[in-house]
Structures are given as structure tokens and as C-alpha cells.
Amino acid sequence: MSPQGLFPRATCLWLAVACAPAEPAVIGVAFQGLGVDAVAVARDELAEWTSPVHLTFDTTLMGDPADIEVARATHIAKTPGLAAVVGHGSSRGSLAAAPVYHDARIPQIVPTGTSRLLEQAGPWTFALAPNDSVEGAFIAEYVAGALAARTVTIFFVNDEYGVGLRDGVLAGLHARGVVVIDEVSVDPRSDFSVVVEASLQRGVPDVVVSGARWVETGAIARLFHARLPGTPVVAGDGALLMPDLAREVGDAASSLVVVSFWLPDAPDSLGHAFAERFRRVIGREPVGTHAMTHDAIMLAATAIREVGSNPDAVRQYLASLGIARSPYRGVTGPIAFTPGRRTNFVMTRLAGDGLVRVSDP
Image 1: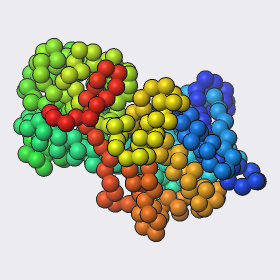
Image 2: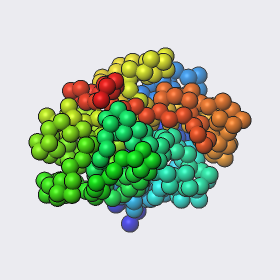
Image 3: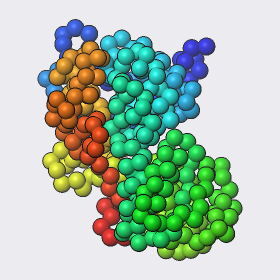
Image 4: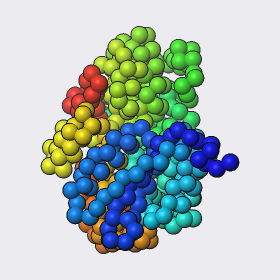
């Protein structure tokens, strides 16, 4: 059965950027959810370019398991005129899809996947976000410094995102002399009250770290808030789906801080312009995932405008950033795919259905 028959309802998007009067180049956007809004904003911005821009939608695939991501990538890779792909929506999906794009010789820009394994996916895969080692060190520095924690319990999802972030946090905490009391694997089906109570039998932490997503993070934060009010919970970027996270956390929001890639209060002109455009086009506040996805799309479009629609030329353009070319100036900051590149994490607090920058623990 074809992928179209297997997955009839999902949303995969491709952004067609005409760089010449001939066939338009196509940028595939290979995930759903928050990416849809980011594509709408990128389309609005690209409409102001002198080159014609077309946006087409495909509604054949749905879901996030690895086999579906491979089917999605296989389907996208057959698109005539494909010059680059932005996606997939998670580290696992991006890793699963990477061999498809490698074999098709199509550059893949991963907006928000943080698994360090993406750096080993081959020369056609470019991870925009700092990896889980960097994010783990960022979280560990905040936990040990701003929160002055001496003991920590880590909850994590058992996939490429959760395990990678757990390992990054563990390394960062160990380097700072912080004791990890417990490491607990969770998923949306967990009996969180039992899991949390069992963990507390092993010791009461100063701080809880969540390498999980919004459902698990919300449940853990609520239980600690009820059992040990005031215990800080620090979550990685995977938990940051708004307003879902705010709904899951409920009254425990005051104890939760979350890593984001970007906030709309960024003082630079690009960030301000993007936030204003997003509010106009979508009608609400953008979050870091929107900004990262927008940067990935606009980076791919800029590469096509600069070097043409040949996928290998686009790949060489991306690889040259920060080396033969200056880093690309994105909404989230300078973009290059080189060792030691800029880290663009920010610690945030929930404020209603939005986020604010953390200034004090």
C-alpha cells in the first residue's frame, strides 16, 4: 500500500520558491503542528521578495513514529524540484528520515531536534538547534548556580530526546558537584503518582529536572507542587508546547521553568519584526519553535536565492556558513553549522498562556 493510502489525514507542507523562470525550487516542510504557523509567516515574508513564491500543501501523512517519518521522507524526497527539506518535528523523526534524504542527496535542515546523534547523520543533515549536551550544560548551570541545588532527581522520556537530554544534564551536574538522587523513565501512560512517590522514597531533591514533554512534565510538576510545594521543576525544550503545557501544569506553574530557543522580547530588529509579523498573520504570540522553524525555512530560501536550486549547491552553502561565508543572520541569532557555534537558549517562566524571561530564580 502506498504512503498516501496508509496516512490519509496528516499535514506535510512544501514551500515552493521560484528562483528562475523555469521550474520552481521546492523546500519541503516535513512536520505538522507549530510548523504550520511558522510556514504561514515565512510565506508572508517571502511574498515580499522579488522572486515569485508558492506554497502548496500535501495532506497524505500523519503521526510521529519512526516508520511514518521514513514514509513521509520517502514521499517528500520524490517531489519534483526539491532543493531542501526543513524537518522533521523531533529528534527521532529527523534521525529516522536522515538516511532517506542522504540517499536522495537532499539537504535536511532540522529546526529543533537536539539529539547529538544528528551531528553523525551525514553531510546532508544540518541541525539548527544546539545539541542535548549543550542544553544539558545550560540546565545544569542554572540548577547549580541560580537555584543553588545540591541534589536533583531527573525524569525523562525514553527516546532520543529524553535520553540525550538526561545524559547532557547528568554530565553537567556531575561537573558541578551536584548529586543526582534518581533517574526515572516516564511516558504519557505512566501512573505518575506512583512513580513520583517511589522516587521520593529514594530521596527528596532540591530540584527536579524534566527531560520529558508537556504531558509528563505537567503531571510531575503538579505532583511535586502538591507533595512538596516550592520544589523547582526545570524542563527542557521538549516540554514547551503552549498553551498545552500551561494547561497540564495548572496551579504548579509558579514552580516551573522551561528552556526555550527564543522569546519575542528579543531586543534586536529581526526578532521584533518577526514577532510583529507573526502576531499580524497568526493572531497570537510566537514561541521559540516558531522562530527556529521560520529561521530554517528562510535560511533554505536564502541559500536557493544565493546559489540556485541545485541541492548540492544548497548543501555546500549551508556547510560554508561560519567558514567561507558569514553566519546567516536569523531571528534566533547568527546561524552556522560549526563547532562552538552560538548557543541560543533562554530560561523562561509561564505567564498565563505565554512565557516570560527568567530574571531571578
